[in-house]
Length: 79
Image (cartoon, rainbow, N blue to C red; front, side, top):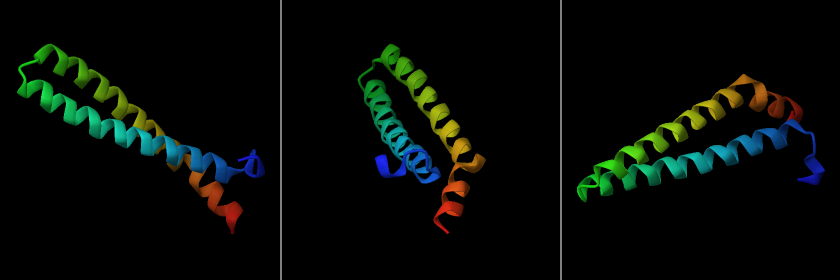
């Protein structure tokens, strides 16, 4: 990372890594919601749905960040 400090490629890589984490979390929360519902734990399911919504918003924000020019700047630098 020190070689890429301040480089657009580092920014793009960080956005991609953060988005991968969000996708993992979204998948896990979806599973936990189903399990909670199947176990009759409706209160827990609702709390998990709230958290899932927050994770989805974060994912959307990361997508917007990538689309706002982070990825394009990294590609321009690589060319």
